Image (cartoon, rainbow, N blue to C red; front, side, top):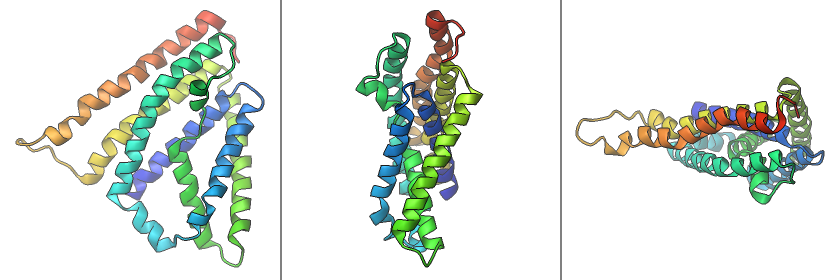
Length: 231
C-alpha cells in the first residue's frame, strides 16, 4: 500500500513544481512556496504525535489509499475546469482570478508526502527539538522546490510546454487514482457481479479524455495568440 501512496506523492511533487513554474508574476512562485512552508509548519503539532509504528500502520491502510485517490480524482476534475480560466487569462495578459490561481496551488499529494517525510524525520533524528527539525526541513523545502522549479523553467522555456507537461502528469495522476485502489484490493472481475468494479473503466476514460483533448489543444491555442514565442 505504501508503495502506491509514495508513487502518488511523487507525482504530486512533480505537479507542484510544474505549477510553480507556471507562475508568471515574480511574486507568484514565492507565494506558492511560502504557502507550502506555512502549511507544513502548521501541521507540525500533529506530526509530533505520530511514531514510526503508527506511521507504518497508517501508510499500509487500504482506506488511506482510497481517501487519497478520491481527493486526487476530485482535484483533477476541478483542475480541468480551472485550466480553461488560466489559459484564457494568459492569452489575454490579464491577472489571475481565483479560479486561475487555484491551478497553481500545491497538490494535495505533495502536501501529504511533505507531512509524511516530516514525521519520518522526527522519528529518525533525536537530540534536537521538533521546531528546529521542522524549521530546517521547511527551509530545505523552500530551497529545493524553488531551485527545482527554476530548473523546470529552464528545461521547458515555453509556457505552453510547461502547461502540456502539467496536463500529462494530471492525466497520469487521474488514471492511477482511479485504478490503484482496485489493484491494491486485488479485485478480480467475477462474471456475476462485476458492476462494482467495471464502472471504473468507462469512468476513467470519461474523466480523463477531456484532459487529453485539452493537452492537444494547448499548443494550437497558445500558437494562435503568441506564435512560438517562449514565456
